[in-house]
Length: 129
Image (cartoon, rainbow, N blue to C red; front, side, top):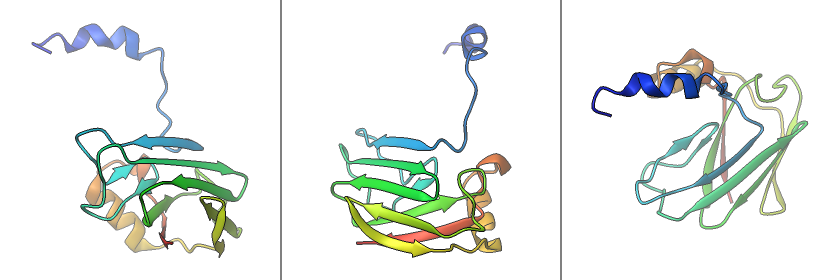
């Protein structure tokens, strides 16, 4: 920005960061990414134009994923109650029902990816369909 970054600060103050949004629409551009908010694809699986829509209502995670067949949910109590069972549907089909355990490994892996404690997952759920 040719050292003009500070000009964006007044505009940015009108917005609040939500590290755990209940709905995520993830559309890959020409530059692909393996992780977006609480969704993660296997390394190298992202393709330009690929779209994943994920929404949490209560303890239910509803996902629409066209090309994907693998996805990891990076979960936290900031997103849903990990003391309770949850249900996951993908493209209208139930793929998981049960409780997901919090693990040290989930936290460690999250912090290794991004050193941001607010976005660190405490549980991981690998899905394959």
